[in-house]
Length: 350
Image (cartoon, rainbow, N blue to C red; front, side, top):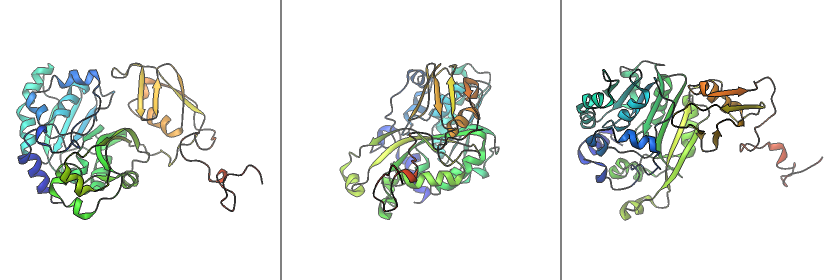
């Protein structure tokens, strides 16, 4: 898909979210109250030119350096600006000049709105596939976010590799995107409208997972997902039986993560303190950790909390001195307990 098609679609064809012809690039996730109040502080023109497919604003961002890949008109950048505070920083990268012009036009307005002495945001024009060509410090970011943009990129592995290189050790790529339940045929991927509407470039989910691991993100964690309904009949006919989903993943840059969830008898206790999650910390779609409760975890989750910006909010029980096999219920059963030598189902004795 020619990159100029995408630039033209988001720079000239679309004037606002109301011009979209599907719900793929429309945020349908439930909005938490604190986030709604932050959006209320963002300029109305910036909000009107928002094209996202999920909530990719993680928690515990005070004083962090954050990068937004495909920042568009800057809605998420200005939300993040409030969360990192005046001592943090947010950089936005986008390839569409018209979108960046909207973001830049309201920089001073937001600085005054937030009561900052100087702006803590900056915007750069460039391609996500070539992040190393921009004025961005390798290992200089605590968090990288992206909202429904990586599916539009022509070289998705290059985007993931670039993000990995820009994150510090223990940093996180937290992003929402569109995925498909199958690999799409070439005619669908080449359709300009389907591509611009975030459908033609959607990754088959089982291609994304090894792609992320190859880039260095060893244990991708699904945070949330929801189906996308294709209500446009002409588009639905072209897409056939393919099913699409909006999903948010978090990928940690931690070199010592293991391929599977291994059990070392460890646990964590959430002490609270994260303003956006005072009672329950949500790591992913199956880790909701209540404050004060001893919560058994696998070795990878232990590292995702102990080796990242979340460490000050937890107490940690155990170490890696003794191994107990696969963590119970993690979806990776022992092959020896499933079948006998003839493949006749589970066996209880020899």
